[in-house]
Image (cartoon, rainbow, N blue to C red; front, side, top):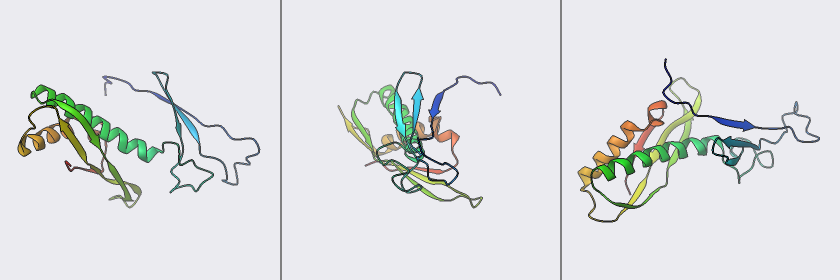
Length: 156
């Protein structure tokens, strides 16, 4: 396998003062550091690890997963819309990921629904053209091509 590109992230966690750790009562808050210099506060999801051992204000891996998928789809959608001569003024996606049992019986993200709403800066594409833009964007999305969960696009 030859790598065309590499992407990096540094994930940093440190045990807090007074945390025993082996009792499993340690904070899951950590940091994601990216090559552009941004640091993002991260944590396990409060639905997985109760507060205060997690942080509702931080990004959890499941949210990051659905955001990455949505962002990748959007970037390809904008690219294809521009190539077709459509002007996009605003794109907003209220994406949802569903956790459940995978085909192998393990817990995982089993479905992602992308729900993009697009505001056009000129004539909007027909329903068929819009569907084709989303189909091509989904087909080209690197993240969608890397996951096994069902991905559905529902234009709003």
